[in-house]
Structures are given as C-alpha cells and as structure tokens.
Image 1: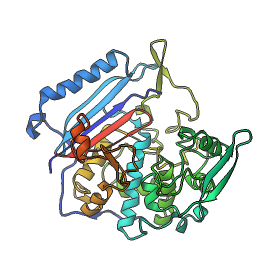
Image 2: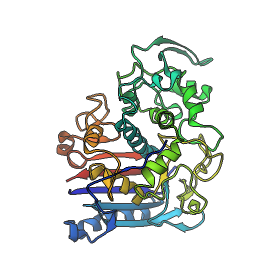
Image 3: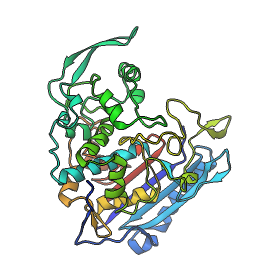
Image 4: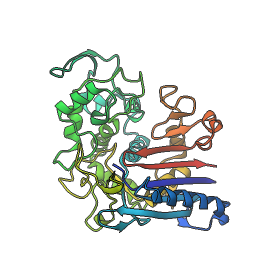
Length: 397
C-alpha cells in the first residue's frame, strides 16, 4: 500500500485479551532514503529549510518533524530547543504533550471493544454510565449567580455521539460558550489534565449531571466526550484505562514512549511548555493547568481527550497501523472494515470543515472538494492536532 505520514511536533508555545495475529506482517517503521520509495530529497529539503527558518526567526522555540511513506521514515529531524531556560536542545526522540491527539487513540480503543461485540455504537451511554440518563439542555442562565434552567433533551446521548462530538457536552475551560465554562468550573469538572488526585470516573459522573449545549446529534460541538469514553472503556473492559491502552495498543505496536504519566526514566525527555517574553522563550507558568502534569502530581487522571504524551515516531507508528488497514508487524488492532467505518462520514454537514472536510469516528477527513481547494492534501487525508501545537496528516496515495 502506498501511503504517507507527516508529523510535526512543535516545542510548546503556551479482562485484557491479547491482540490477534494477522496474515499480513508489515514491517515496523524504519529509516530509508527518499528515492528508494519514490520521494524527492530536494522537496524534503524545502521542509528542512522551512523548519530551520521558523526557529531562526523566533516563530517557534523548537520542532521535531517526521515524514514517512510506504512504511519507511524518509525525514526525521529536530530543530531548536526543547527547553530554552535550561539550554536543552531538541532531539528527535523528545516527548511532547500531544493533548487532543489523544482522542484518536481513545477512539481506536473504543472501536477495538466494539469489534468484540461489547456494545453497539448507537447504544445510549446511560446503559453503561447511568448518571447520563435523561440528559438536559441548557435553556437560561443568570451570570449573577450562575444559576440556570434546562429542558429535557429529545434523545439519549449515544456512544456514536460521543465519538463524533455531537453529544452536546461542552469543554469547560476552553468552551466557546462562557455560560458552559462557568457551569463546569462551579461543578469542579477537570477539563484536560491535572496533577490533582482525581479520577476520570469522578469527573465524568459530575459532568453527567450538567446541561448540554444542544440536543444530542443536532450539532458538532467539540467536547469532553472522549474523557467520558475513557471511563466507558474501564467499565466495558474491566481494567483501568491506562492499563487497557498499554496492553492492548501501545505494547503490541511498540509505542514505548506514549504515556499518560511518564516513567522517571523518560521524564528528562519531556519538551517544556514555553512562551515568548521580551523576545526570549521562557517557561510557561501554571494557569488553569499545571505544566508538570505528565511527570508530577497524583498521576490518577487518565484523560482520553487530552492526557497523553508521545514522540513523533510513536504517533507515526499508530498512524501507520491505520494506513495498513488495522495491522502492523503481524499484529491486527482493527479490521479493514472497521477502519473504513472510522474513516466514513459520520457527521454529514455538521462538522465545521464545510465541503472540504468531514468528521469520522476518530479523525477529520479531507473530501474531493478539499483536495481541489489546494494546499490541504489528497482525498482521504486524515488529520488532527493538539493544544500544545502538534499536528499530523496521513493519507493513502
């Protein structure tokens, strides 16, 4: 299969079953010359020049960029600094907080359990988390005391709604609606990641009692639905979410640098969160999140929507499994048919990409019109990014 992956990670500006064997045995990602798999060294030099200029001009503190095609890594370079305050240079195996790039991994775990017949995509989530029974939609809100009224939603929230960000659930501190932000803050919702001693079960059960933006299935609203699904995975699988990912996904794919909380032996490879002050890159202060969350604190909150850290190569390995139709190195994670479902248009015209993109069950996917508009990639390119300035694109060519 001809395929290509591009990942750019930018130094931060602000009961368990074994996987099944596969008849296919695609090789793990490995280095190769660009020309050996039909790519141009000259064109890759343009990417190299762009990254060097971005760091030199002070637009970014540092970058790791990776390009792979046909299962071969043809470009993998590091630029600038992983931490300017300590003078630590960026390396290709440095670990980034990937934030919302966690969502596709959580969605994959959900679909692994779906393949096993554990649930149906259109099951109400309240079947597994009763606190979500009889959801309510926000009707009125008083800024003076944050009191509000609601009306009953016209349907239950389903697992498909949660996967596609059409559940009506909000995103607290980064939500576009100030009323929802205030309601979530008052309720003590943990939105992204934390060093505090809280679990996803505790946060999700609080979340279940709060009003929705709109009726389920009515609109696309970026949400904490993947955190809900992290807890759902614990219920359905019977094991902690982090353990499920380690045994069922990360270990089989040899994603050794992907964690919610980094082992002490890997902590010195974590890229610092930085901001620019007086033309210098400095450590980002503690705000609504603690930048030490992957290496310090209680280490008990496994955010399916934003909590993972990883390397460019680990994430490329995850994407290569998708490009291979669900298999890598003789281990089958998902069936080809399931991959097609994940890549299918699940949101019709609800997604904000207009005619250029639609949203599937894990990724934004480029349409023919998106390709024709130019600069976005080829039809079927799937992508997403993370809060800390990370981005990926992958496509079969």
